[in-house]
Amino acid sequence: MNTTKKYILGKNEIDPLTFKEVGTSELELVVTNEEIDSFILSRYKLDRFGRLQSSQRKELEWTAFPSINGAIRINDKEKIKRIGFSEQFEYNSGELKSTQLINIENQKLISKVDYKFEHSNIVEINQTKYRGTKWLIDKQLFIYNAGNSIIQIQRKINIDEHSNYTIDTNFIIDDNGRVTEKQINHTTSFGDSIISVYSKEVFKYNIHGQLIESIQTAEDDNQTLECKVKFQYLSNNYDLISKIRTQEEDKPPTIKEYMYDDARRLTCIKIENCGNVTATNYNRCYRMEKC
Image (cartoon, rainbow, N blue to C red; front, side, top):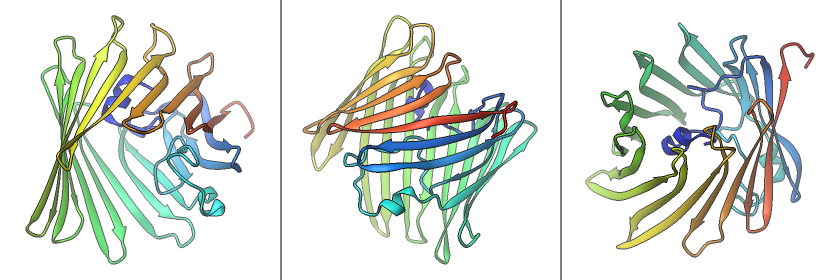
């Protein structure tokens, strides 16, 4: 979420579809917090093109560890530190074809993701997750306008033969190609029961085309919940977010700060909540170095 597009689309800082660092051979994410000893969140190996080749990580695709005692509390320190999964990335003609997530301990396949492109645009992502004796299917379809911007994402998750979860996200785009509003319809089906939740996020930009604020609203039990998010950027010349301040109603703010090196590569993400600061440091090894 360190660029405008990543934030609006809800992408991680290390997004396998777009991440590339030519010259980097390894990337290690190390978490520090005063409540717990530092630990490795994940390790990535990159190919000679700077693309993700393999990784060792947790099942959740964290690229910044949540604030301890804020979004997450300490129950089992060793469980928090444990890296339990390995991931392999496969490419075809320069485009990501698939990924596979393996449980390191028993070498069982946990999930597989297949990607489909048309004219270099991602149009379909299919994820299959193994849960016990059944497979959970998570499918996303991407729809574009004539200007090659995503205007809709249709997502459906088949939980079992009786239940499914759909998320339809629509993007309203202005004449300058900027997303001004994101509308999300969540629908959960359990047999004959259907639960629907609607939310939206309105975006405001500065004269440089950078996000300065978003206002999220959601309906819950006939109440409207609001969340305000403010943004700062590294400079007016780059689409690199330096700070995100999230303020939910009746809750202390969460501040997410991004730091970069002189080459504008991400070096650290700090998340502060309730006075507790958790830092995720991005440590690199370069191709000309011995790692």
